[in-house]
Length: 455
Image (cartoon, rainbow, N blue to C red; front, side):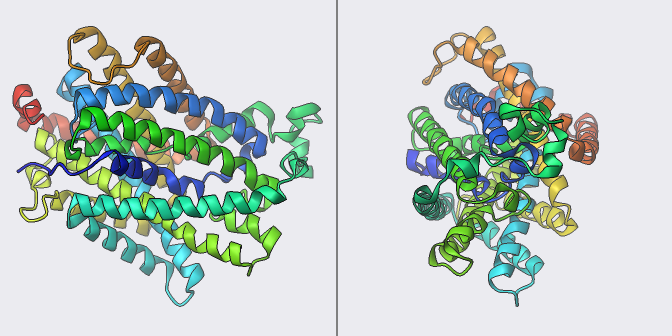
């Protein structure tokens, strides 16, 4: 059975933005601790340029090969089964390890609002509920994603409108604390406003990535788009523009209404910043506190969609066990892939190693971008006549910029001392994945023509 085509550009926009929108509600503010407001904003510049150039190249791939496997299908067509497997596995690493961190945040958020509910109980309940919502059909799932994404976006708009009248440039340019100032050895000018100077900016790059992480997951709904060749570019490009506006306003306004040192190590920076203007019990503060939950839900729900479709596609290709590609006869959804992604999410969430799973997810995402860009270059050279309904002008130039910045992002991620444990775990995962491919995965791969016949 095939997946059902029922999605329009508005659904892809909601899925792409919804996958990422929680990044405006938590996580990014740790970049204030590494580089301060200015350092984080500077770090966002190359990251934004990277995602803009990458998503243009990625849209070309997604429309030329509208496949649920996304990067796995692109890399396989370009380089063969093994590279397709590595790209698909990198996507799984990103999409299986991001939801546990978000689910933990959902649980903590619910516990904060209702202390009688244990955080871990709320986390498990949230994962179970959103796996269930995905079970009952992609159109229902996409409509739900659209609703929670719009609610979360409204919450951000309320925050921006409430913050603008109280914005003070002096607050945004607040000097470093005594300890942080000492680290720049008395440097003058703008450097005195950035903890650790240039290294502080580099350390902020992973948190700048958090503003856009998982945007590419919308491509995994390609086989469920009514007209993928026309609708995918519309959904992706409007989504990227939306995320850029969100990042700019959130990053600048938060430090403009409160001392950034108050929010640099918390998971709920927006309510805390507003509390300095409206008080902890103020109506606006409480409203943003509540709506923030919708932002987390939108990303958790959307990434579960992405992870299940990647499991489904890799199973259908023969890389993974066949049962993962079974489609429910009633709802036309890959039920075993959804259940499997839910189980992995639960197991990772119960470890409590939030920082580690986030880092593993980021490493997987950058590896995914690298393989996708390699596929973009290879297909441009080896298959110039491939039908490309959306062809990027100046593709090699844009792709080259994206590749340089991709390597830059990878370097900045691996530069983090806190990422060493994640690098070790990620390396172990890739070794295990390669061993699986050598002993099991490569034995059942479907023929190239048959696999891409589903297109």
